[in-house]
Length: 204
Image (tube, rainbow, N blue to C red):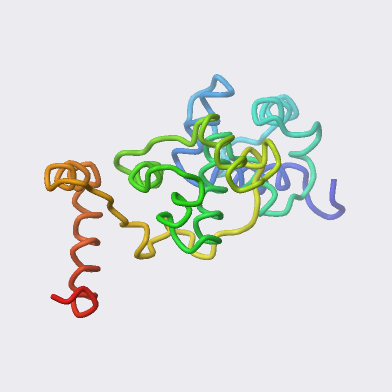
């Protein structure tokens, strides 16, 4: 425990870093087998987090014993609070940034650019499964399990939105129409904007 700070304040601070939004609170409540409103009451100081709940959170989130009782760094708490799917998505975004876009990363790991876009999409989200995670590690010469541990920081906290993120590979007009339909209206509008912005380069 840190001197001069109440243990309940320490636990509350760590909880708020673990549970940054309502969706996170619901997930944690589900893991603990309690109502989401119970977590909310702790967050707004209507209830205090006792030893039992602190230990249950540590167990549910696979945190070291006593983790909730010690002031934690926000970055460390954020990373520890992510599940396997979130960790892999975070690492995928880091790699996209390092490679200059999702299209280039897709080429480097020998996978479909549209598949990478689906993983990044909020409307048609796919997960980075174990098979893809291992393939990325193998293709890029990364250690086994690299994708399962948080690495690096993302410059833009929003989804990486570079031109190559809207990379579409289609052999026929029908294939192009299908891929655009899968992207959703927001991505289609972004692609149209990019085409208009670069019409001189495209010879239009």
